[in-house]
Length: 99
Image (cartoon, rainbow, N blue to C red; front, top):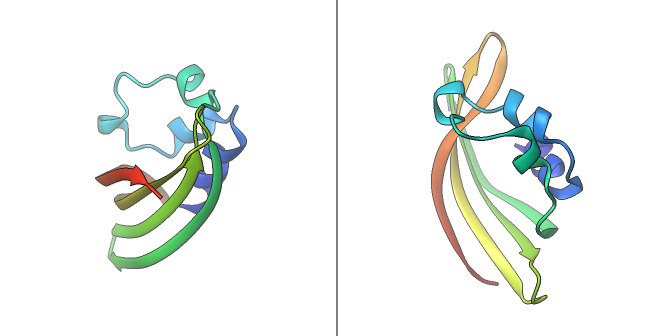
């Protein structure tokens, strides 16, 4: 989870993001699109995490700024699946709004 946040924050790491995405939910995504740095990510807070075998969940808040400079908040409960020893992002419940 933290490495995916870093990849988004730094930009230009779309290949890594695709490699850490569950294949069935990554359809239609491209490394080029994921490499674009469209937001300035400013902070990450992990709120909760759990694991049951090869299933995992991470709840977090991430703050960012877009073109207008107003702080925004992304609150997500992400679902992960372990395959071949690697954790892959499946999807999540997302809430976005002003910080």
